[in-house]
Length: 355
Image 1: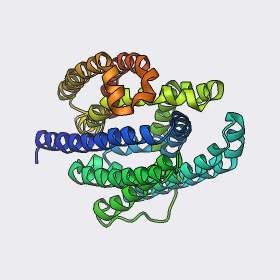
Image 2: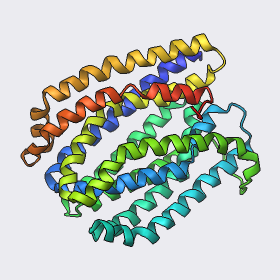
Image 3: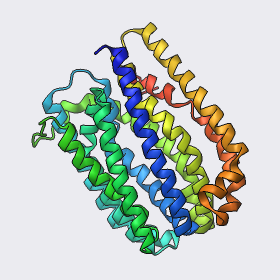
Image 4: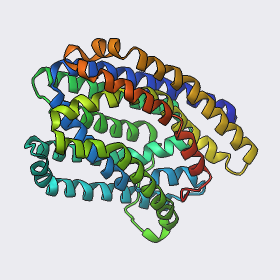
């Protein structure tokens, strides 16, 4: 199969997966918005914000390094795998130890238990993370799409059932945990291709990956800080109720780019990495991704801003009407933000994570 045909196949399957998972997420939000309170969504937003920072250190930029470097030995893969798992376990332990303090700081007693439960999701995800990255590098997007959709479906069912049983905010956390566990199990069953990591963790043999990853950690920290500082500080100053009313329209505004941009990043990065030595080809791929991203995201976000009142009533319900102006503001913000991904993956494909 040629690079062109592999690209189109990857785009088709990644599109299918993104559309399917986004549809499930929107239906889940529509149902949970009627079963849960804005305060529940506010607490969930805080947990996601904290986990976003921890995920950066758990991955340590290794995923992008694996895709960039074309000559990786089995020993290096084993060391990278156990580094990822070990980092996740250490971070999960750190969350368990500090969760009482964070709960007191936010004046939210439930936060302690939510964070401890979310920490297990971090570990569960790490067990299959490298299998997923290698599959992306090998352009096995058909199998990846099936894994992602099946895992998302089970997480969706778990969240809805628990919310119906009055589990409150725990329904969303447990739904995420179910998705992570099912995903890792399926990745090992369908995409490991018989590979098993050796019991080794030699930092010397993965030094170049760590150097590449260190730049990515800095980059991701800056991006995550920019994306989550409003949630982390806003919850402390305003409370979970108001931040829930704020965070849900913000999350909805990112759903559109969440359909299109993962296609760009998941398919575009390995394709650009394989063409990193051919500058004219790399330029054509990059400009095409910009055109594709803007031509879909821009009209969608303009429509979101115009029809925000109808969208809020339809998806969230009457009690979320104060969120309408916020959704309109976030639509304009997300429109401009949506075209940033191709520049990032271009730099990573060329090995210029330092930039």
